Length: 349
Image (cartoon, rainbow, N blue to C red; front, side):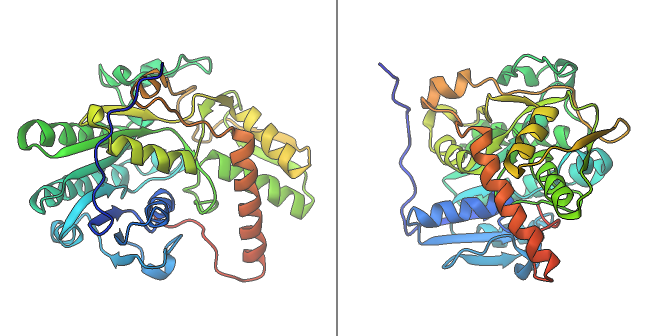
């Protein structure tokens, strides 16, 4: 018989939920998720001008604030019952390898936000960590074993972005230990889907490769450039699984201040990801490999033993299903851009 998760009561539908990074991909999807569940008071916060947000959800209070500033964090958290901190300077491997200082500076957001949430009397604080927090020594082969939560230590995180996440996880653990703030920590593994960054340098592999296939079809230049040799492996989590997982993790009493993987355990090479995008696009392309481009670790996968044991659930949208929806959305964006319309592209968190 399956173990029933030890779930906490949610905040009331009239209590305030604060979501930072809400002008970006995951934060925007989370705001829509809670709105669809019937929560009436949602405050969405992002440093981008509001017209540039990826999604704006009807009925949600939108604030344009730079959360690296302490006073802005206090403003964001006024009257908050639950705080979901997804604000960070980040992107795909091309961004996080080239702009490590920018990524590290996100620690200002995390430290100011958790203190502001505590001072505001918030009941819960969720932090979006990353699989980049894991020891890179364990990720040197494409045939890497799946990473379990304990593999973050001894610490040897991804330079810049990974260390920022690992330090911020520690803040969450100590705020629970020392001050009693219920914190949650999810280590995201390669989230993708519609309404995400798809061009401009911050996009991740599923979006970048989908766009490249779409461009090749449109231009008639039937070739695609792949960063690295294509053997690198990753798991990819569809956005619907991500927001559901955030909700479950944030309201599980057994996961207070406990880092947990939130990712698919379905492992794919970059070459097989290209195969899938080509299948969706109905085209076969000549592949060119840029061995000097940023490519990250050789292999990374999510060990989902812990999340299945605690929540009796794991992200389960197959790549072919999620990428088909993503590809079609990016194709619409691509056509809209050619016609001179405003599109979701390359700004944000």
